[in-house]
Structures are given as structure tokens and as C-alpha cells.
Length: 352
Image 1 (tube, rainbow, N blue to C red):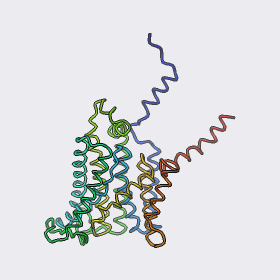
Image 2: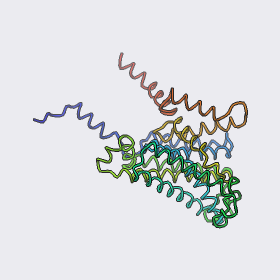
Image 3: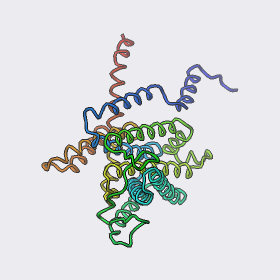
Image 4: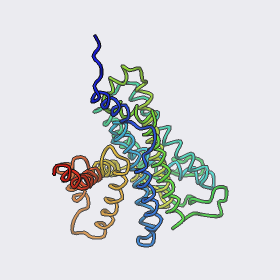
């Protein structure tokens, strides 16, 4: 005979079924509005040149935050798609003479490359360890190739790749359809800020939809998701491609900011820094890696002006301390502490 459900059991069922909301909570919108206000007022305190670079770092960190933190795909080669976006923009801008089509092509090329690499790995049933090795090797191969393109034969249309000297002198970002109106300085910062907020909103919306919940389920137990009938390989390929496109957008904005593209965008240091940003900021969140990228990017800029301490040593030491004492990252730890302090008076009153 079937036993009737107790009120406690019914409450548990309701709680579990509502654990994955299909809309973005109002608290997130509050944080989004505060971030928007902070980014609008930041040029009053910090130069737009520095702010633009920090925003580029935040977009790059956001790409790995989605791929790794949401989808559970540890990619050691996010710099590959970052560099592809930068190089694709430079080459396309030189050949097209303006930036509108170049930006679209750069993002599409980086996303397509990520999807192609992801399909090869996921449909080939590559394990997690080998997946990390393959993405790392892909980055190193692009770095090696970009350094070896110094001859005149290495050109795409009118754009010479330049080897270790890179590609300088390509058209800057301009108003769509008007190459005579370049966007530089403060205007470039606001364009980058709008791109960051748009990408953040898009990824947060995806996390609240069925696709985001599927990625979370795959991250927790891939075999169970596959046995439930979901196409795990396609979902991971799509997420990997989307992360690559976001990294390509970051590379495009970096090229517009630096006004030169060199093979350093493919370097191992860039890939390592992105992983450190995500871990320090808080893996499993979207805001945390952005915060980590801005914080550590600003710290790197401050340390770059002195020769007493190597900034790589400081970054490594900071990563070790966070992993040992704040394994969930800075943002989740601070949020947890803030919630505990807010609920402490209520618990004390309840006990009395």
C-alpha cells in the first residue's frame, strides 16, 4: 500500500523542483545595475587606457568562466581563441579597410575554431586530462607558427603576418559603416564596457535557461545526463564554441586597444593568467572571474612599474594562498561571510 506523503516530504519536493529557476533573480539585476553605474563613473578616477585593458581581461575571464565554471570543461588554451580573434581582426581590417566586418569575422573565426576543436575532442571521447593537454598544445602550436611568419610569403591578402614583430598599423575600431570616424580613448572604453555587460547578460540568461541547466548537469555527472537522453557531446561542443567566440571578442578589443598584434597573445602566460583569474575570483560564478581579472590585472599593472618583486611570483603566491585558505574563491567566500553575518542576529533572536 502506498504511504501518503508527509508535509515535510512535500516541502522537500517543492524545494528541489524550484532549485533551478528559469529566470534571472532580482538580486542579480541589482548587482548588474551597480556594476553598470561603477563602470560609468570609473573614468573619473582611472584613465580610460587602463580601464579598457581591464575590461578586455574581464571578457576573457568570462569566456573561461562559462566553459569551465558552468560546463565543467577545463581549457588550458583559451589564449588560442583570444589570439585568433586579435589576428583575425587585424588581417580583416587591413583587407577590408574598416572595422565593422572585421569584428564580425574575428568573433566568427574564433568561435568556429573553438567548435571545430571541441567537436574533435568531445565526439572523439577525449578524457579530461587529454582535453587539457590538447588545448594547451593547440595554443603552443599557434604561438610557434605566429613567430615563424616573418617572411614576405606569409601574408593574407594585403596583410603581412610579420612574425615576432606582429601586425601593426591596421585600421582602428570605427563607427559602423563610417571608417572616417575612429573610436579611440574614452569611446573605446565605453564600447568595451557595453560588450562586457552584453556578454555577461547573455551568459547569465543562458545559465538560467534549459541549456545552462543541462551544462550544470553535465558538469556534475556527465554519464547520468547522457543516460537521460541528452546529447552531451553537442552541448559541450556548443558551449566550447561560445566560449571561444567570447574569447575572440576579447582579442578583437585588445587589438583595437593595443593597435598592434604580436604572437604574445598566444603565449602560455596568457592562458595561465586566465586560469588564475577564474580560480581567484571564484570558479562556478560569472561575476567572480570578472572581479578576479580586474583585481589581478590592476595588481599586475602596479607591479609592472617596479623591479623589486617579480609579478609572476606574486601571482603564483596569491593563487596558492587562495587555493589553500579560500578554495571557493574570493567572491563566494566574501558572499558567504556577508550572508552569515546578516543571518547571525536572526538566529540569535530565534534561539532566545
